[in-house]
Image 1 (tube, rainbow, N blue to C red):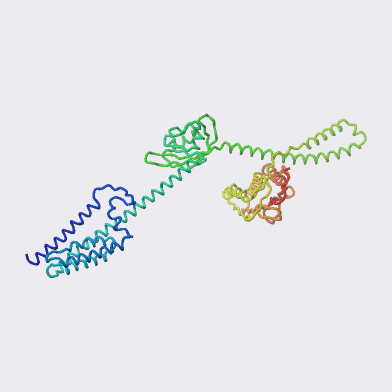
Image 2: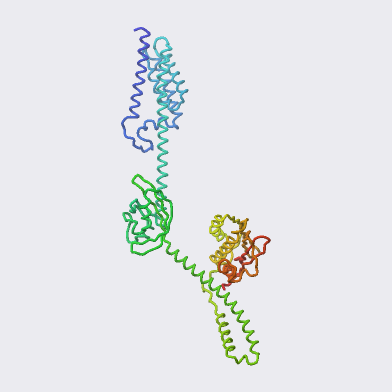
Length: 510
């Protein structure tokens, strides 16, 4: 065998041995084994690399690789001629390849190839053989490096997926807890109106005698919601409505529902939040009745006061006429006197105030925020602007919250009507404190008031409605020792509502 044939056979032997080793290594690592999770948190196919190529073992593995290279070189030098141990350099290269970059792997492979040529008992050094050995070593190192890198990426990805799954489970648990503990009834149903799931509040609201709503038709509880599901099956809805509801025992109630439809792989579904408004409706109607009675009492009191004034004047005239000779004996004059006395007694009868005292310390800022919500839409639609200047530090005031809101609403609506025909349409609302008083001003750019002295009289002849709004508003504020005044302006009008700060003594209700 000549030297050329020998080198060729050796090169093919080294290359074939390298490929055989890599194939065996690949089969060992990526064989047909199940991908199951080990106790250390690493998945099955990568268990062979989890410890050796861990970042914390970098220094140790590189040290072992250096020692192996040294031992292989020494043993290769000490062996008999024509016996080469160059194949063994694959082990330290594979060990170090998982921690080195590609240029470093190339350098290490070249170094091991040179050691193989220098310390082995082969014939004279051959550049071709050295190059082929370098390529084999480098390919092995690249393969291991890429395999380790892919493994690390996959493990990182699996950890990411596991963390996202954990977050998703936490979110689902939180949502489940939120739904189950919600005081509002929450139900989901399919396109046929069959309830898929309902929380405990839904069961208590619709069917307190049943343990579950699943499988029931929503038609027997909320017919309007059932109609929405059936009629708009192909549309995506995001809306709310008030409708009549019926419990399982036949009791009717007023329901407020917020619902939305969504698509799934099994068809359209609907999720709804249902709230029983029956109690709120009763409270609202009772509150409206109380305000109606309060306003009626104020109105009747004002009318009676005016009648008493007229009766007093009639009594004076009647007394003067009684001195006329013979008139006191006139039956018609006596009948007129009787009628006047009866009218005076009738005018002296006043409605008794409610025994319930609603005057409490009230925070003005929430009331003004609620006023903003109620009036700004109307002003915007009419092309008008509302400017707010509310002090940050406003004390509590003595007032009836709902009566105070009624006063503010009446003033702003008057401004809205007054500015319909003006070019400039601005309303400025300010609230500030002044010596244990809080003053809320409403300044508009309307045409102003022609006869300010007649503003707060009832039954104005030229009023838009019945001329009672400002009269009742002033009476409401006076019941809490406040006042409503008109402040003359060069342009437009200004009404100021004065309220007593809660730091002062509580006013009596009357």
